[in-house]
Length: 520
Ligand SMILES: NC(=O)c1ccc[n+]([C@@H]2O[C@H](COP(=O)([O-])OP(=O)(O)OC[C@H]3O[C@@H](n4cnc5c(N)ncnc54)[C@H](OP(=O)(O)O)[C@@H]3O)[C@@H](O)[C@H]2O)c1
Image (cartoon, rainbow, N blue to C red; front, top):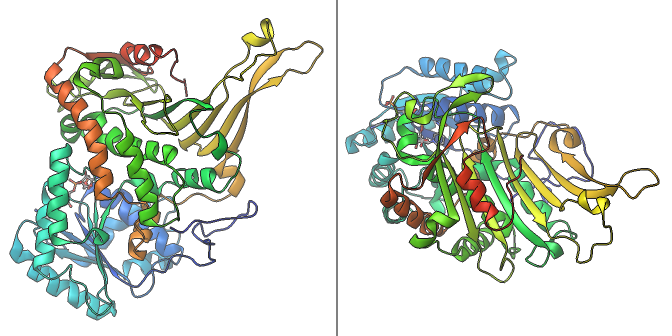
């Protein structure tokens, strides 16, 4: 994995420069083939990411970018659609025609139906002709931005048509989008299907949280500093809270969300990935297998939650109508496209235990929800009180626990809360906060997660992608909870007001351990 290390804050345009060995990722010229080229993800995230990589000079020449979907479309129409997406969603807009033309000249479109094996012969012939025209070597990165039910058939057809074969030192890789299965059984089955046609080294399961700068910085923070690791354990840490809070409701994704729920959509993947990075042991090296070996050990150490414990250690709820962002909003069951009898959770909280030497007795509280009071993703590590309290009386009343907060979005940064003396003759204490903000310290806008991940996959670095065993370990923990919720029907399904911090049952969950949720 390449990490950008710096001596001091500096305004530098290139956010990927300066790896540990002084070199950036070595990326071969290749074809980036996006299946699902007319979809939302391509327009909002993938093309803007490729545009920014192109602006920064990270797409080696002659790289080709090929969009694939069913509808026949001339290259120029595809380019016009993608330009519109970049104008709307890119962190940097096309400032001049030259910058846009540089990317546009690499963009092509091929129409094919993923479920039709015959389409792949045509796809192969069309791709080879694009490569020949552009002089692109047959290194291929297939990005499957397609509905999950097409993933297995797409990979099988790619293999059968020879498009995943590697020869003469050329490579072929596949990026697979979430959701990766809907439970343990389906994830295992999908892994088996993929591994039948491609090697694990060719498969890149994307979790875009891992491409976020602050998430990568968590590893640097823990393992490039000597002062935190000695206290990163059950002796000093009281508990950990991981929050992914959204203010939006289901928006236009009712059909998808109602089948998934927040636990499948956010907790099984993003939140458990954050937990594994916070709790993992130092890896022996910063390479894909060493890092993922340690992460999977954490996921396997999660104490299973038995059926009889589900109502004590978890909370789930749906938002009711209310006020959010100054507007009156409907409740979940009143949202267009949501069945009125739906039991899908829009909020979930889980009290987890990591059963290993380092974390014995330290609860990890996870929560995620829609229509909450604030949009925030953070990891908060709360430390134990000092062993002996020197300051008593009113002074002691103002003492609060030390909390180290890693803010992932928005306002990416790290803060530490500690107690300080208020100036003056009296021993008055007050909690204060020391803040590190990415934006102000480095003076550069961090790249989007998809930029980093596309570049890593093109460079053959899978450190920030999830391995088959990680996905299955995460589902092993989550599936029994989902099964119990299903059998409970509405018995434990709570509600919460839109614009609040979640349901009463979640407050009770954490209060049972004598703690409280942070108001982030
Ligand atoms: N959108 C997001 O923000 C987001 C975030 C995280 C993960 N994801 C995941 O990314 C994937 C794509 O999401 P999306 O929102 O972009 O979906 P989408 O807007 O529904 O797009 C689906 C794409 O697949 C193509 N497609 C569907 N069936 C096809 C077939 N048989 N043959 C060829 N093309 C076919 C569609 O093209 P035509 O119908 O034009 O052929 C379209 O380009 C999903 O797995 C989703 O879960 C999306």
